[in-house]
Every structure is written in structure tokens, then in C-alpha cells.
Length: 85
Image (cartoon, rainbow, N blue to C red; front, side, top):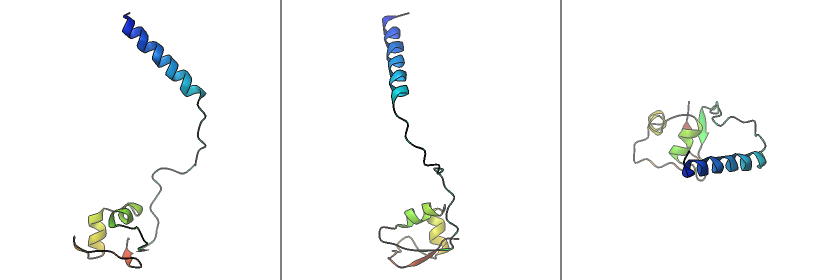
């Protein structure tokens, strides 16, 4: 076994030891890909974008545009209701 290989094995052991000693973050018990909300409409809030709304409801931006009859140049505004079914 080469010196380089031994060195790598030693580093791996040290890393595993450090990881074992690290505190574990509390679980949030919430799945990372939560199901989209069941709403059929979304009221646009400050900071919303077509992209962020589409991700919230599990849609593509193109699908959101199609459902709401928006073209590529359309702008959404605060208070606007978007259909998200």
C-alpha cells in the first residue's frame, strides 16, 4: 500500500469520526416535495413570479400561461387572480 493511499485512508477515518461527533439537526418531519396546494386560484402577492407560482402548484410556466391565456410578454401584478387547476 502506497503512502498516498494510507494517507487517504487516514483522512477518511478522521472525517468519519468528525461526522459522528457532529450534532444532528432536528427533523422537520415535512417531506421536501410537499404536494401542491389544492387551490384552483392563486392571488398574486408582492414578489410572486410566474415561475414561483408554477413551482408552488406543480405546473410548468408554459402550462400556467396557457391556463390563464397569458403570452410570453404578459406581466402579472399584485392582486391578480391566476387559475392554477
